[in-house]
Length: 171
Image 1 (cartoon, rainbow, N blue to C red):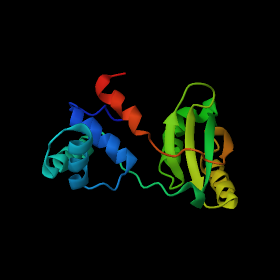
Image 2: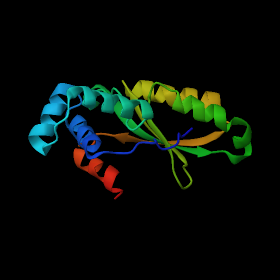
Image 3: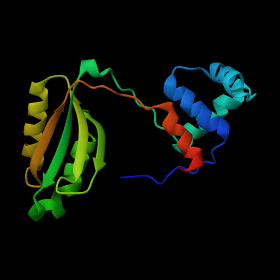
């Protein structure tokens, strides 16, 4: 389910490119080369910037996802509790059902009683209820309880460029 960490030797330029892209994902390689020179004193061609971005993308250094504006969907945090009697025979199908659902934005494992969690998005509350109903119908022998919390008034929905500076430093 999880992949190994990407094998990438970060140059200062790479981190700066990622930071600028997190500020504005639409920047062209020409724009990025100009910004690197103007803001950071790094002279590099747009071809080199483009090759660096392509290499990082191919190696899995960053992921690209289309995330619609939060005003278009209702978001929820879903937590899944298991029926341990049936877990062994049905866990994989249940996990793949949740992971592969078009409603699942972010899916992860955690500690504690509710070990699978997902941030999910739905066009309406009715579609959310329908999804829960279908999940129980298909995997109720494994999933004992779904705890869902409505996420409303999303106040932040992005990656801050500053956090990316820690990639190279290892902080």
